[in-house]
Image (cartoon, rainbow, N blue to C red; front, side, top):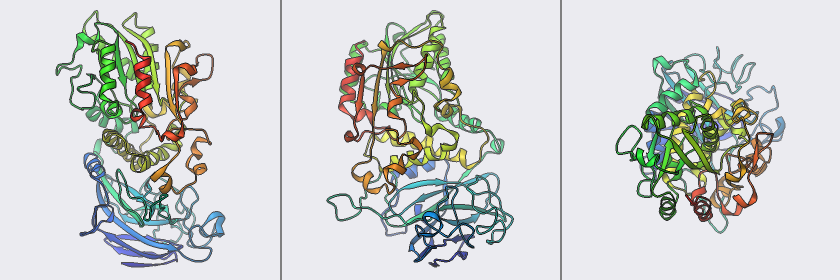
Length: 538
């Protein structure tokens, strides 16, 4: 165990690991277990996180546990000097994150160009965030190019110098909060159970030689080809919560049923799968919908990162053509999140398909029809941080949501960690004012066929107690717009402009903040089931 004395000195923790923590007094030590756990202690992670890391090919290189308090005086994190904490600009030994917050430095061994590294920080209140390597340095000693001199920590995304990788993370000490009526900090977590200490876990993952320097869409596309291929699947009440089902490639898929009359098609959102997004729809609701459509209930599994929604729609029409030369598809749609953009693209493609595809009613659930600011390239890191924190701290939902979305989050983390060139078309499609949303339609849709379900999410219970930032800061990326944690509330049922639309109040369900509904938990709300069975008569 090494002492932190509040200065900017470099503290050698062994194994090639060095920490600098100006403004903190306490201790730091390398621990062996996942997120720094020791034998005899309760596990610090749930099985969901460890299993997801294994699936992503990520292993822990080192975990550093920091137990410290702010040093007295202006140098401590959150102190008066320096505009809200830390030393004043230009003060020797100052460390700042890319966001301008007081920071701490962790240097770890560089394992070479075929091993990527990212850092998962879990603060004292249990809030996780992802961090990426800093810009290269010629001097890791704190001189010119080091953390105290010109070219110091600036939030870059490449390797450190001198055979090390450098991370700069916030050093502010969070306070574990106690929920109302409780005597101890809230401990229920979906991913991480640690409370009261700061842990910096450096994770390593392989980079295939042919993907070194590749564009983000190529890296994500390789993963999605293996893990998120395009397929149509049966989605009746007996199989909708299961990953095992038929597909358009065979395995008992009911192609004749799909094209024998109006069908109901479920379309999932970003990172997810059909069973992941919709497993929480109660079986009685699925039974009612199956009855309305005489058993013709299906889902579209598809990639959401490496291609845009128009490509998803075109792939669906290709699957329909593969069923037979005269096959046609007449569908109503239930869409979650980005799936709503696939639905709109399908309506556009269908209008030009000569009757091959006809879209009837569409139910948008949490769909970013007006975009989401998290899809801006500058906010990709904020997106994965927010999703990781929500998965860990939000009210419990179906486990399939946690596992599915976490797999996608980890893939994007690796893309960012590699400093991959170019964006991800699937995410860029949701950018407000972006090219995709600006050109998705050539004619305004018929609003009588559109339905919308949105929510205004505000943290309650455990999440409110643990999320240390005030709501105004938590939602700063949304400019104080009401949102469900990922998508602005107002943009689900309204799109401005001559080719836009407004869903009428009679065809919309607005879930208030007191329901606790967030982006991935809509289908646990009974009123959503009531709306679906009412709006979709078959």
